Image (cartoon, rainbow, N blue to C red; front, side, top):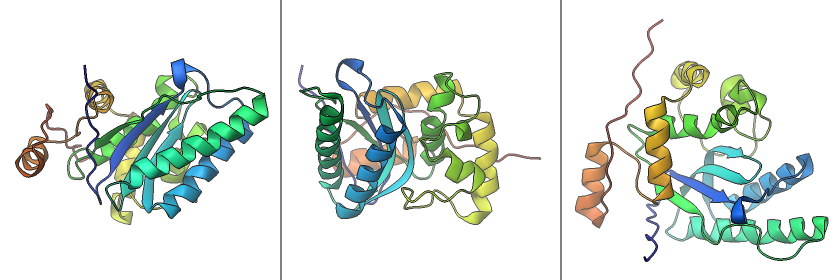
Length: 222
C-alpha cells in the first residue's frame, strides 16, 4: 500500500512526530536532549520554521511547528535527523539509522484544535507516567507555558497574554481522552486535525479530506 503523502500548508501549525527506528531510544542522558534541542533551534531558524510547542521523549519527539514554505519542515527535520544521528552514533559507538525513515506531520486548525494539540504534546510525559505534572518534565515547552520560564526554542506564541491563564488551567487538566485518540490517529495517518469548517476548506481548496469532530475548548468558568 502506498504511503499517504504529507500535506504542508505554509503559515499554519503542523504537529510533527518522529520516532526512533524500531522504537529504539534516541536520548540516553541529559546531554542528548540538550543536543537535539539545540539542533532544532538552529535549523528551525535556518529553514524558517517557528516552534510553538515541543516535547522530547525517550524514543520519539513531538513538535508543533509553523513553516514559512512548502519544503521548510522536511528540510529542517532532515537536517536535524542527520546531524543528531552523527552525534549519537559517534558518542555511543554505533552505526546505522537512528530514526524512522519518515516523520509524521498533520496540519492543525488554528481556530478549534491548536490548544488541544499543544496540550496533547505537553502531556506526553504524564500519560507515560514519567511525571505527575507536565511542567516537571525538563525536555518540553511546558515550563515555558505553565511557569512563564523563557525557552529559546519556543519562537512563536500560542496565545496572547489574555489567554495565558486559560491555557494554564487547561494544562492542569490535560486533554480529554477523546481528543488524545483523535489527534493520535490523525497524526499517524498524516491527516489534517481540525473542525468541520476547516476540513471543508481544505477539501475545497486542495482536495484534502479527513474525518474529524468539532473540538473547540470550552471557556473555563471560575
